[in-house]
Image (cartoon, rainbow, N blue to C red):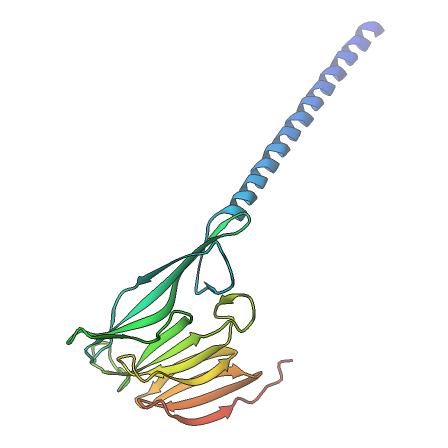
Length: 240
């Protein structure tokens, strides 16, 4: 009787051991498969083609290819002019992936639709246009109210100020103005570390808020001349 019980117990424990061995082997296989899947996913993510905007490489890169293309024309209300951005797209290969920077506005073409005459805002493409907005003779009260463009203000990155071999919105910017036909381009403020706002707040005024030399400044400009009316430093507050 004892011999039969011992044999039964021995067979039971052998079955339990085999089951545990199979379970451990199965778990190990699952872990390996999950690890391989995670590694493949990470590798695919690290090596996929990446697309960015508002980034222009200006460093020495032999493997950079470039394309230039005109964008869509925008009508300047109340005038015979339209504005057409010139986009600069760049593609280059890094160690494990390729990267493409596109929709980088580097210039504007101003076209007179009455005479078909045109002019470029800049003579070159070595800058990056962060923003460009039309100023009007009066603020619109209702959506269907007609208005007339009287000037354009531009936010421009002119050089690689932080030394990363790229032109981006992390570089210092300049605020400039031009006429609605792209003529009479002139800089209003240079070396802006951070531009908070450029907004036409009245028929004859534009408010600019920015940081320069670690100081926050507000300025008012006349519309349409864009002559500076006043400048003031924003008082500091206790942030604790």
